[in-house]
Length: 155
Image 1 (tube, one colour):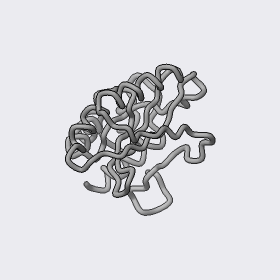
Image 2 (cartoon, rainbow, N blue to C red):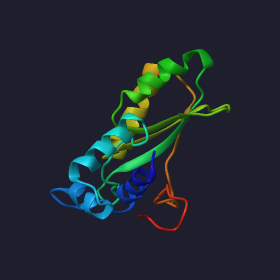
Image 3 (tube, rainbow, N blue to C red):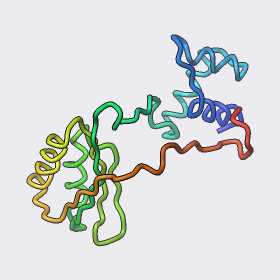
Image 4 (cartoon, one colour):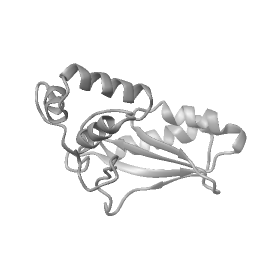
């Protein structure tokens, strides 16, 4: 990853333009063509540095609800249980931890009823008794932006 890639990553996560051709506008800031920017973005995606590019919405403001779940999963069933949980598009994160409750995942959906149904389905499909739901009470973290250049400048 070179200096231009780092500048591009800073721009993408902090100020991607809302425009018909956002990569053209990013290219103008970086003195690159639109195609050069797209090629760099695709390379970064292929390297696994960029997972996705998309909007971040305040789910509560648009009527969605979410919960953090913790599950006790036997070591020999981790892959199987993770695959079952990850089959739900409403699951946005799923992490393995070293603790008694070793699998942590987030569910986000359009109603408490749907959320409870999904959680119940997961419990039934995995035959796990130990899944707890920890809905958020207050939001503290709202944004993380990594600085790829090691200074205070974004570009």
